[in-house]
Length: 426
Image 1 (cartoon, rainbow, N blue to C red):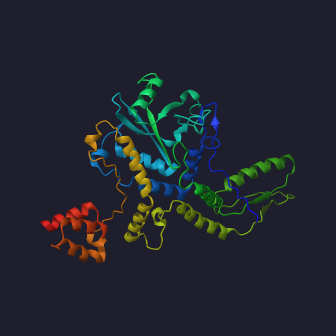
Image 2 (image 1 turned 135 degrees about the horizontal axis):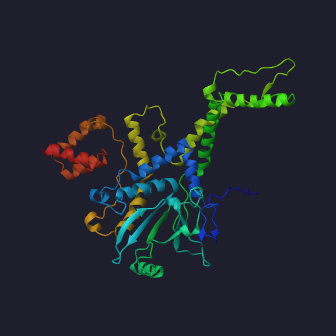
Image 3 (image 1 turned 60 degrees about the horizontal axis):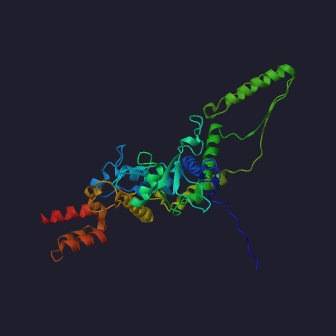
């Protein structure tokens, strides 16, 4: 039996950068920056990542006093931090939080750190590392504005709420004033691992979509004219001058705003007429059209995202029912990620100073996103309205039993159920 060896390019390469003292994130230490650029150039990719982030954030934390609480000197609330974290989680498959502690071992501030700013410390001889490095331009994208300097790298300890560990980190830094605090680094690939986004396999398709857009742009800008050669003839010094003039005129003749113009060429007696010779090519219109249609679907599939959420008409004309069903489906697809955010937020904020007052119920649940349209409850329930009314006015059922049935069977939220029950009691 013969075995076929299947080869694929490594998704993510990393190595020790001895000069900077870090582990590179990608071959050139700019994987997150490349991801941002590819997504930013893809219409579908950008829309999918945006929706993914919105569904991870949902409607924010359920506890009002907590989500409105200011949690850092910038004046950001807990919901502000959650929104930033959700965006980074959607874009990179990871996120980071910076926390400061006081001498009572309480967290005094929580900040969301741009995920692309962070790199792991280089591995030591035992393949271990204990710190994370921060720099705003690892990808060297802004060196014309500010030269990249090793001295600008800041170092942070990993998040650990153990008072003994905090005391040791403070001691090693030379005291509380010299200590930079801790960073909680979350990766969907596991502890102390650089993450890959959920759509990593679709990055090629996103790049392809950018290429398709470039082709469409080129065709429009060049009046859908075929590429080719404009063959002229050089007749001495005068011919060279004429050639430069012709080049200038041809350049000014190109573009969508010049469509329908005529180009004037004056030939003297004995001159040879210039010739335009188009490059021969097969008719690729149909192939281009098929690619243009399939690529967005492949990108959307990487997110398990219903097409209607990225504004694609699926035949229902964006009807309310179809949109609600799409929201319900995608909420279920993103539930595990929201639970991850809830768990991490609890791990951090349970040590926040005054948290017992801000969140006495220890509730860090995130409200799922809903499709809210101006419809009455009867319009939303449709044919089920009569059944709901029967349950409400059934005196044989307890209030608790009614709540369970209305929530589990008919999918009503707590606010709707409360208003209905109060109306019946009145």
